[in-house]
Length: 289
Image 1 (cartoon, helix red, strand yellow):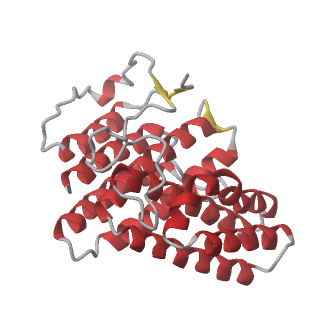
Image 2 (tube, rainbow, N blue to C red):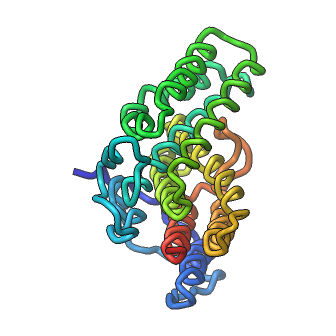
């Protein structure tokens, strides 16, 4: 059974902005009522968004293979079809955790840096191991993740962790290149943006951070998503490049939701900014084919 995550009621101007993002992605097919801002906030019915709701992972996003648990990809072959999108989502999930851990460590929050640095190997490696074995990268990536976790736990200097993260990022890029499906990656990034919204929503109660680790997960995901979209925006495939550019524009509308990795700094505490961006990103990814 899915867990209901309460969403804070937003001011009218933010609901209009969210609607504008999605409507633009649909070619203007959505029209939302606009209230007089001077009249104060609109009291909308309370809504809940189930954490496991397939809002982003549309069933018919591609044709090769079953969705859901993410299959084994075939003997000696990279994952393909829906399996590729699942696999690529998991890779970027891992990288987001590692990035959050690295930046927390850099900021001197070493206890949480150690926690996040260990998450990729503890939480997700088993889910991607079969796919990584198929492309010959499982042992290399496992080894780097173990070294990164152990180095953080041992109090290594930041230069050591930077070097390990750079090695990890190169291996991630090699895995993505082996899959060789940028359209699947676009879908994967949209799916992870939805998860960033789920984690963000779970981090706050009444506008205040009550679970900073969830916020940090969300921060790490969006940071790596932005990096991957920048790479895809330079794709020689014009449809992929155009979709990535649209997804970058959608992400810009969600940027005010985050402050720094520790949870400080200026931010607009509104998970609907992230969910709205994720919806627009999904539309753009689907339009790319």
